[in-house]
Image 1 (cartoon, helix red, strand yellow):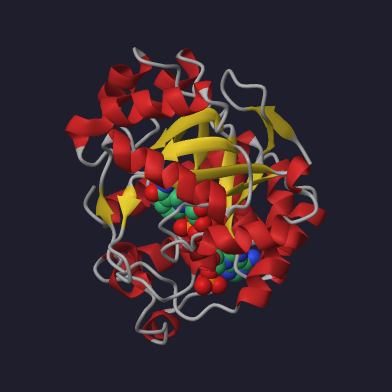
Image 2 (tube, protein in one colour):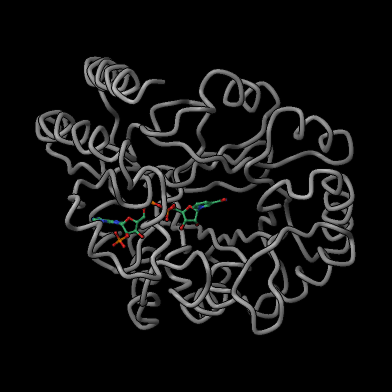
Length: 324
Ligand SMILES: NC(=O)c1ccc[n+]([C@@H]2O[C@H](COP(=O)([O-])OP(=O)(O)OC[C@H]3O[C@@H](n4cnc5c(N)ncnc54)[C@H](OP(=O)(O)O)[C@@H]3O)[C@@H](O)[C@H]2O)c1
């Protein structure tokens, strides 16, 4: 599997990394319905067996649960896996509702808790999950720089940051990576953030390349209505009208492009994200071994100019249909 250097770091990451949000399960406000831990562990181990060399998780996924599952899955091969996790979204003891907190004491407490849950001595990439509260991002970033000095973290990254926020913290310590949303339905980073990251040697690890499963083509309106009540996607704008019909129409029109490439719609969505040279890797979510078996090869698939142009034309039409 292809690897790329993450920003200015010494990390060589496979172009597909495994995302573990869904693996956190349904027992919190942003869960994905019931999830079987055995399947989660099997999915992570399958991903590693297939050659994927890094895992993205977060303290808040399943309010601590996803990190514990990752630790169990990588036991015995921790030294061959790059672990990326996140801080900044906390929850009350016994609670299920995340809130943003980024003061120094909180970041330290979170790093210690993640080290413990991940059963590791060092976190390879520690990311601020959201710039919230905004006035504390410098304090959080300075604390991450201290934790790097202390050897508890190898590199620091951020997620969901703007250029202005990146500039503020770059003055304190270099940013290894940005983790933004990027997929055919969310292209907000293309014009400014991606070129900024390339110019400043900040790696980009793009999240939700299949828009939480929507771009796999498996969801019909009826299928979405059948999602469990505790699956956050029921409330997501992209899974609801007025966008949903336009999204499903787009997916229909993508099918012939996937077919002539002999790839699935999921692989097409991931390969499309990776077509941009500024994108280091895509974080691909999977909750079952079969899912990652179907998607991992997209990391090596290069779309032709003709296909990229055809997708662009469809996306322009889609943008017009939703009034953007
Ligand atoms: N930093 C942030 O704020 C942030 C936000 C979002 C995500 N992320 C990271 O990015 C990762 C990936 O994003 P994501 O999980 O939102 O979405 P994604 O990768 O776009 O989609 C993942 C979901 O698609 C479905 N799926 C996966 N492979 C499939 C296949 N081969 N066939 C059919 N369905 C398939 C699965 O859900 P179902 O089977 O239930 O449909 C899976 O959970 C997350 O796990 C997380 O690590 C970060």
